[in-house]
Length: 128
Image 1 (cartoon, one colour):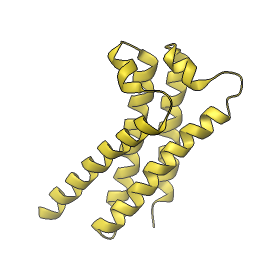
Image 2 (image 1 turned 90 degrees about the vertical axis):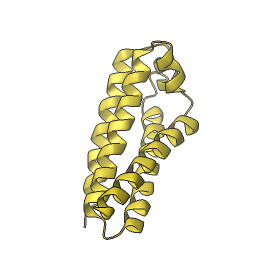
Image 3 (image 1 turned 90 degrees about the horizontal axis):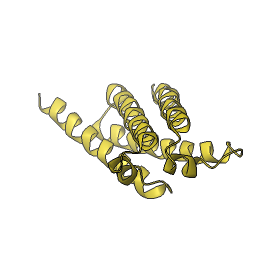
Image 4 (image 1 turned 180 degrees about the vertical axis):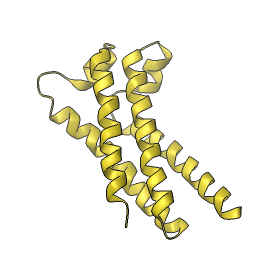
C-alpha cells in the first residue's frame, strides 16, 4: 500500500510539473486562453495532460524503482515539450501559436491528437 501511494503521489507531482513546464516553455499560454473561453487552447491543454498521463502510466508500470520512474518520467515530459516545438516547425503554412490564440479549433484538435499519438510512441519506448 505504501508503494502505491508513493508512486501515485510522485506521478501526480510529475503530471503537475509537466503541465507547468509546458506552459512556461511554450509561446501559447493555454491556461489564460482557456479561462477566456478559447476552445482550441483547451484541446491543446487537454491533449498535453492526457499525453503526459499516458507517458507517466508507462513509466510507473515499467519502472524498477521510484528513482527510475522519476528519471524516465522527466525524459517523457521533455520529449512532449520537444514535440510541440517540432509540430510548430513542421507546419510552415500557418503559425501554430497564432492559430491557438485565434481559437482555431482544427489546429487545437490536431495538436491534441498529436500529443496523444506521440505520448503513445514515447510510452512504448519507455518499456524494457
